[in-house]
Length: 192
Image 1 (cartoon, one colour):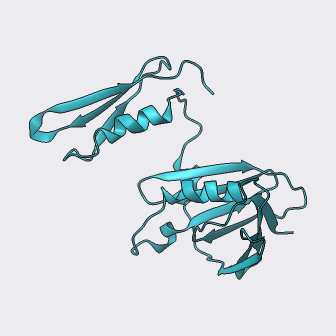
Image 2 (tube, rainbow, N blue to C red):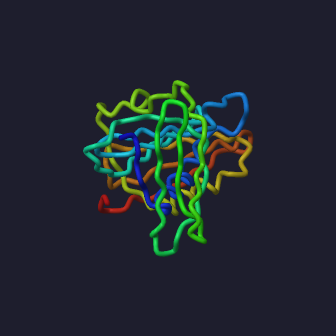
């Protein structure tokens, strides 16, 4: 069986997050899509635009599932406030079929071409075997700090970490002829 089922809320959350990491120009059409890998114990969504990438793993257990991989353009489905709506994703060699209900509980079937393109293997890009220091940062504070440099003429920032997870992240931005700007984001004391 090559079919999975997710809540509409989960599907939409993944689509929204993945959209931030897709390409938006026509010169790289495969990078405008996202890759879904269904495995017996998880569903993985990967989006890459050439400079940034995301990998979202959703816990999913189905011993009868035959693993599959497909590439498609992301879209949003109606979701029920009580999170009762689901979306079924059915795989075939030629098509991916999405079956879900709209807010009036009408069943919608969306059949899209199954793109057989080589998608970038996220795990080959990210080396999980090297030693890393984990620092837990409040994402709103980090975004606020990064947003401070949004209007700078120099669009490159530097992030500096230490091997001590209790030390702040230092963010620097050259203001070209004007000088240098920096800020720090303090870590959360306990990892979540």
